[in-house]
Length: 453
Image (tube, rainbow, N blue to C red; front, side, top):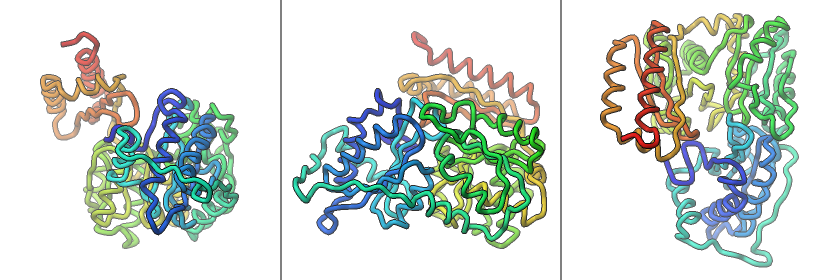
């Protein structure tokens, strides 16, 4: 992980960590690495979610890009995957998304895509970091006609929704779907998309005010959607996060269908249609043991990466896999997209139900989910480093994991996007794994506390 760009872009508290000055510097550096003798005015598109700080950072980024000669097209509020799709459709040289995804409104982030819609390579991110943080190069300061211009794109939502609708030939007419937009970017697209496909939509949390994004709603608070589906007797529901690159679902009974269950169902459906290239799916080490057992039972190879959609995508691109994702609902369907797309996932999941003639509960029941306990231990950068260098603690965690046998495991990882160390324990016996998770979390908390040896 770089000094500026983490596992999912540059992130921080807006206006204190991710400042307008830093955003402008990132814009200037990004323009500098894009400019060459044949393209003195590279085109960059910028999208944003609904956070109040997005306008401030958008202005700073655009100013930085233009000051070095790039032309900027502002897309307005769109999902992150819309930027990834539109950068290629619009023939842009790069795309930038301003969002902190599922995090609270005070956070924000800057994610950069290349001209093909993929996240910027480590090499280019390192080059931008060296310009911004080390002053390795000084961005040019053109004058007159050398300065870039800013324009406003008014077709982004329409073009993106039209594309998503084209990924299925199945009508959703007759389905009554609950949709939780998390007061985020899906507020601009979800109603248009799912009504276009014929569904009757009951939409909640689609009234963003700049500070209510992800606030007790969306994919991180699925209970609100579950309650809606049960009260309204709907066919099921889908929930997105702030920038709509994740999707979780609930069935008609309000039961959660998480990312692992969605991946299981979609991968098996692709296999049965002869469309699962290499007969494999890519998941992360945080995926539920039940998913691994499901794939074994159905003859699907499980390819595992470390946590982070960029690592899932990297594995997919390097080895030709077509589906991958995370338990959080960040799912990549490479036939249609270059990054995780929550609304695309929802379209494919609901289309699957129509093709199989089944309810969402049948999809959720395909895979047995092992009990899993996750505890977040708060940790700043120094505490994370302290944890990673503690050999005695590592040995204690390994011994605890061995006590679970083959039907359980412990996974402890440092978050790349949040100030926490995650402790995950899973196995057949909930009471046992819960006690073990609490014990391990307390050991970590004690070891990294201020003053601990």
